[in-house]
Length: 221
Image 1 (cartoon, rainbow, N blue to C red):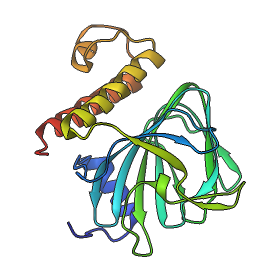
Image 2 (cartoon, rainbow, N blue to C red; image 1 turned 60 degrees about the vertical axis):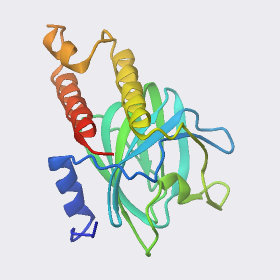
Image 3 (cartoon, rainbow, N blue to C red; image 1 turned 120 degrees about the horizontal axis):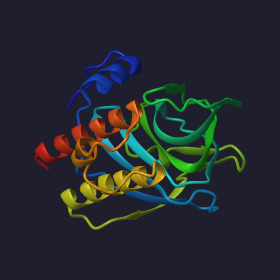
Image 4 (cartoon, rainbow, N blue to C red; image 1 turned 120 degrees about the vertical axis):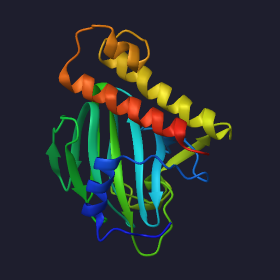
């Protein structure tokens, strides 16, 4: 693929409207714990990549914290999906817990976050800079407290079966979401059709999840 976007904002709007799911075969799903142990249960998956532009989905376990850091070769928008997220950028705290809200994080913007009882789920919509090939933002990390640059996380790869990895990850996302919102554990389609009392935000999230699942199913790995 070649870059066809004028800038990161154009890519943000393109992806949020069209939501293409084209994961690269070379990037595994990540189960990450950083080296000083402050981040537990940090899971990520690349949903889309086109040249220097990329989308990653992250899920953070409840009562976790991400320390201040930068990604020196990545300009991004961080997009809220669900959970309890108190996001920090350049020492300013944002409690924007509405589906689809986003914050711009430049390559020199120190940022981090605190995650409450429901944990958190968000997208990172990125443009990789300085000719650096996209991988994961966890591998392009400069820690503010320790002033160390390098890989922020120890990565453990799941088995290499491509389809199984991605669907296992989405199943984990769905199970966590149902648990956090006290929803019965059934398929997203059945949950929408069940007559269970759902908020508009929950209905929107479930429909988005179904769309992602169907696109992955249709994608020829």
